Image (cartoon, rainbow, N blue to C red; front, side, top):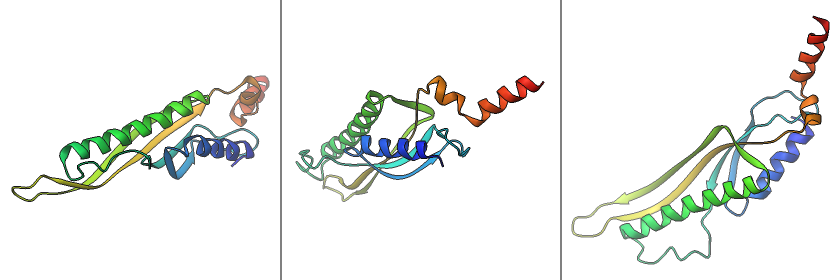
Length: 148
């Protein structure tokens, strides 16, 4: 992995830290050298805002909907922050999986607990001509094009 890729992955971690806890990442290509291997795919847990008033009427269906909406909003905020920083969704796009436990007891409202959101997304940024020129595949094309 190139130093540029390490820096880019670190920057993405920093950007999304208020909203997401990155669990894993991978580069689309492992070409090495100086060129970044982006786009990058990340798997993350969506963090709950500790200041959010989500404990009201805990155990009700409305509370469960509020928590799910809160988690989806946090995921969207993370993507907005990435876009503002110059990163855009790549070919892998984005997936969000929300899980929760539900206990049903006749005559009592459904209890929803352990609601969590996992997110998978792929991002990349615009590459300058100088960056693209350092890509080993671009260099190989230029060399082979000149030789053929």
